[in-house]
Length: 206
Image (cartoon, rainbow, N blue to C red; front, top):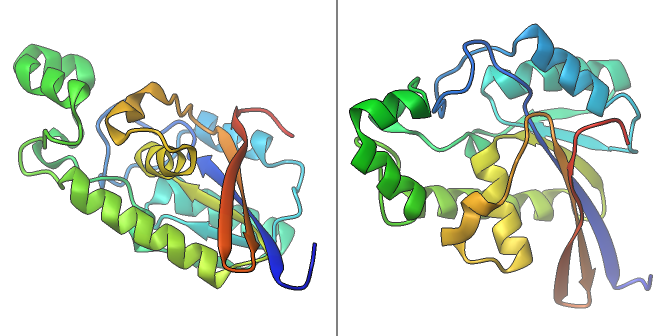
């Protein structure tokens, strides 16, 4: 690699299982279950050479990120911009519950999340802008380093869609399992930036 090029590696790690089961839990700040803690410990048990940890401030991400940062002696930063999307009146409700109470609305959301916003929720366009601004800032701050970003399924889907050039209305085709990790490599050569997905969905130690 020449002196005018850099390689940045960012690992995207979704939080593990959360107490209370599967729900539309955007800003609702529930803790990890014991199984969730074990899932995250398993997937991170082999240090990948990370130099920096960045996390969503929500405790299902931040609590484990703090434990990991202490255990492997790495700097840790919380970034509000990497929170999950806010689901408004759907916060804390399961998909099954919404299928019983608001079937037409949830079907519209699944079919076209870009153009249908749940009641009182954050709009997709605002969420996307926030995430992509934060992503560019992350790259600028840690260019040339290996970063672990602990965050949420919605955040990871946005980043992967942009990396792969996928239409955003297809984002639900990306499965983001609990405690799964995806790696993006960003090569900057002169003034050109090339991003590629190295792997996606690893849920065991690497």
